[in-house]
Image (cartoon, rainbow, N blue to C red):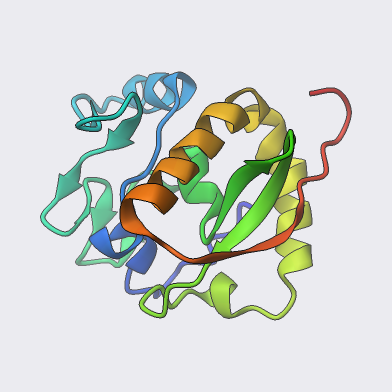
Length: 161
């Protein structure tokens, strides 16, 4: 899943169109270890930390090259785009936002299952401890922005949570 599927993309997921990107303590530590400082903030009126913006884009998005300058260490929220997670009845589900403006290679993909399986293999094991908090963040987005989404399926965990 680490191949850069975003090459040549206009950066819709990195712009204000897709909203703020949630960061975990581990994301922050990894990015700081790479030499970056002051790249996140606590979202106003929220308990969540998000990446800073430069103009309409994420602070790490290079508008000249149309790409992420920290692609290999980007936060889990960026890695799972265009999907998000939500909790219903104590279970976690993959969702896909119903945003016309978020034209994304993966969003248009007919075989979401292949990408979800890769995320469950490569991202979710490292991110599982934050799924509850992240799902609360998703709920906050839904309530605040009235964004529509569709549930794709339940997240399949490999091994222990």
